[in-house]
Image 1 (cartoon, rainbow, N blue to C red):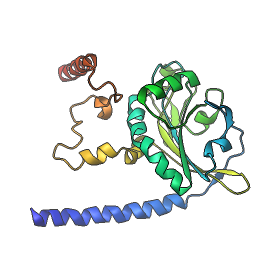
Image 2 (cartoon, rainbow, N blue to C red):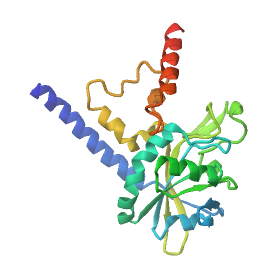
Image 3 (cartoon, rainbow, N blue to C red):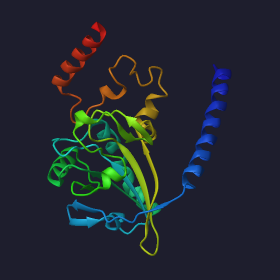
Image 4 (tube, rainbow, N blue to C red):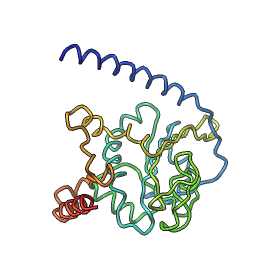
Length: 242
């Protein structure tokens, strides 16, 4: 056992060093200056992109999947929201603000945010090109999403008009804003601490028998929902039959 653990420890250390290298390369990516004017609906009224920094020089935006006609946000995005909610107070100690942005109207966003018990700032880009420009939304109807640009790939099919993502911005002393980084798809797993915890137990994520990896995830107020359990069992039975 000890020898096997030491062998694994060497690989874990190699992964740590590789992550340090990737972090440095990420921070050295070229910056792209933001020239377009973006306006958002917020609880304070109309706000521009510079306002969202809240006095900080760095801003992290989570592109939260919430289509304008949905009554609640994406359950997988909500799992990530549960993780970054308590981190924001700490981020602000390092000159960094973090918010969520969605295309849903502000009243729907606010209702869902309050339901989830979150306090982070969440604004609507419904009347803005922001989500489209940063590949968090795709034009057209959901049924038309056969060829979209997402995660730096063209002609990728997607099941909705929204896709999850994370973007970072920097504002210099002159007020100029730069886009410094974005990530999408499985790159977002690095922000899901529950996966890191599951990865150290014998059964791991235990997702092999599911229709898709995060099928088990629910909004945190719905895990005791019996109707979900019935749907979940039925979906597994259907999959086994097929």
